[in-house]
Image 1 (cartoon, helix red, strand yellow):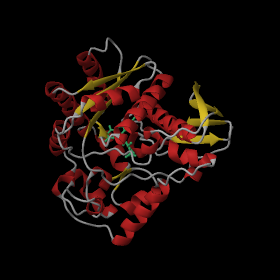
Image 2 (cartoon, rainbow, N blue to C red):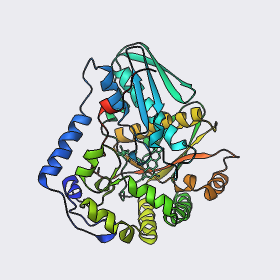
Image 3 (cartoon, protein in one colour):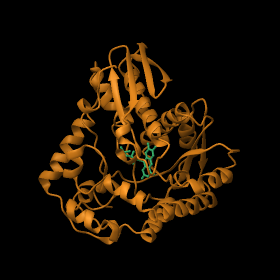
Image 4 (spheres, helix red, strand yellow):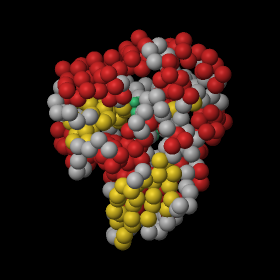
Length: 361
Ligand SMILES: Cc1cc2nc3c(=O)[nH]c(=O)nc-3n(C[C@H](O)[C@H](O)[C@H](O)COP(=O)(O)O)c2cc1C
């Protein structure tokens, strides 16, 4: 198994077999120092901006970080940053509002750890969280916030014990959200069929590939410069000079090799979680984000990894067929996430807190 440093430095073969290393020791050190600051433990009496730092460690589609926070001692608003939409993969802003829900859940867990209760509501386009008093309560889910990551690698094939599956189900429980856990091999093979159909459609869609490529950061320096996007190394790919990464992208990012990779990823996973909302609305999508985030944090607390395989819900032509296969009776499947055991990969970046906070309007 490669170490995290080897992956950052491009010391492993990835990216369709291309193994050109380009990452200096100084670059790695800067990246790791930034991560240490970004993911530092919450102080005992944190400033409100520290709660926002924890909120923004939430997962979010393509790591665009589509959020703005307004916060004081009494309340927080989380508003969509519509300049960071993903019009091709997420034309109805579903993933955007799911991402806001993930951030809201982190913020509420961080508030609870610093002695604040919180009540959450949806007001038009934004999430409003009102703080109250309470005892400071840390939890394994709160502790997992800085360690949680999306791990897009081959897992080790081990099954998850029944009591751990129960903890995952318990964590994800939220009114209006259903979680389906698929662990049988035939079910995973069927999910794989949907993922391959969806991935093939996306790889044939030039607009999808263009949008994805725009958010790829080919080395740590590029990721640190923007504070967002998908670092190649965080998906197990080698770091490359930006000009080279962009030049070879379409040669090495190919439908067949990506489909083979997904087959390996799904077959090595212990299971697949599908999140389904009762409500096809922004409030329903925010709840999906909250439920998924609690699942992801509980998984992290159990040393389990997770990664999205959302192709069956992103490709319109497949979405209703997938829902029908799951027996959802007309409801939309919102998220598809695999889970299992694997070593961690490098963490992804976030923008500095000052850039995502704005005054109450
Ligand atoms: C709503 C939503 C949809 C996502 N869809 C995908 C996806 O289809 N494929 C994928 O590899 N990652 C997906 N992700 C994971 C994000 O890319 C990831 O959270 C982001 O890059 C930040 O990385 P981190 O989770 O390691 O902090 C999704 C995340 C969210 C919240």
